[in-house]
Image (cartoon, helix red, strand yellow):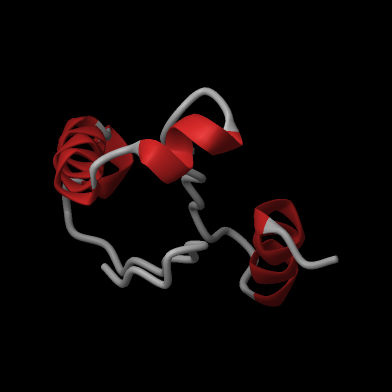
Length: 70
């Protein structure tokens, strides 16, 4: 089964030194499914803005059960 951890390990192996920030919104799967997409987007933007590793810019790759894109 492919999950976020599998993808993270693949990227780390393929591109050594790559900074990866896995984000999980909600405490469990049901809460994540029930969350409002706009609230989730705001929360993610806030987390990214506060992360010192990303202050000079970043390239985002997203995976979501809702097929959302960043």
